[in-house]
Length: 470
Image (cartoon, rainbow, N blue to C red; front, side):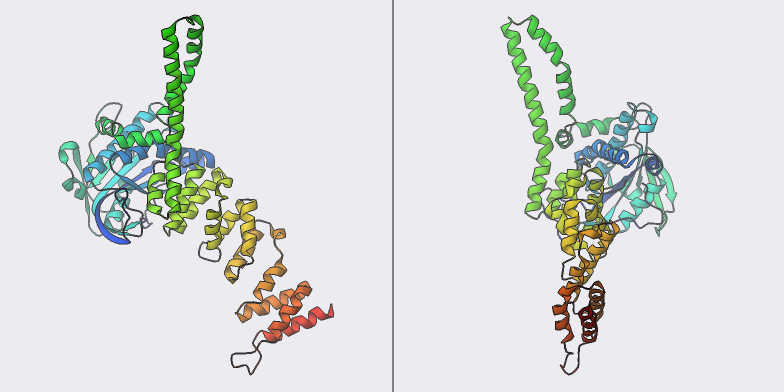
């Protein structure tokens, strides 16, 4: 999904060295990269939500290992768009070239309707980093340049060209453009393409695929080991026949034992590597280190488990809007993945606030655990929270899960006169005898100086009369 031309480019996390904690506010000179999938909006209109989720997972699996191989960091995903940051401008350009080559190689193996095509735009400058978000003109320029970049190409501003190692990349000038919302014209360059199956020649891609960071990320997802395991499984029939025909051969038996051991070790290594980042992210969350958790989860695919953990890390980093987006995506894949107490507590805490409706509706979608959290919230001492929970249950047609009399009894303890008056009237209409004693207490309330009745006292007495007549 290309960002709207009138939209303000989003702020986001910035890369920090592994093991370091980002200070609350600092300035850094970074290469900012925007990518997006060409034709994504039209494509998603023809697909189911599950197909869209698989498309984005495949996109991340193909590209994020390359980003990491060149020392980059995914700042955030915005639908199909990636916002990335690099400390080295040269590496940012090489990364863009490698991503385009990898998608070209991938497209050669797929029918046209399943191919992924992206555009890559890069700018360089000093950005303000605050609480995991980046702000400033360099981010805005990169976002606007992405709208100008043709499909399958890598475009960059003059600031990148002047700072990078030109010996490593063949550039040609596009010219000067007026970018929407940017005060000064921007000089633009493009990376020159070459003839052949890979538009950028494959050198940058080969460098990425030879890096330890790339191999580690690929192994973490099982993308390297799984083909080997499938090959071992396919060879199983041949091995069985060979063992039968040459059962007397001691040397062959030794070979078979070794091959079997390798297959077992590969399977075990794949399972261990796939689970290791998730377990480490869970430990990082347990010690309150949201940045470490997000870094570990960054290269992983959009599975429900990963999205739930990512949302927890975003909530811990005081980014509740992003957390809700992650959890909503996870709920589409597997609602049961959100049934942890940590997630339910955060969602319940949003009730009554600016994200109240989204949080309430998500809780209602989670079945029993989510609805129980909403029912518990109806007993909260916070008026906005308890009524937000009530409204969420009503929207989910689950009013039978609550007893409104209990909610109105809680309202009688409120300090707001209007709230108490409304509750007294409702309890009288419901004919609830449990309200008689609480109403008597309200009827005896006095004002600040104790000389006159409190404003809610007459309503409480009227409600008592109505109840006593029943």
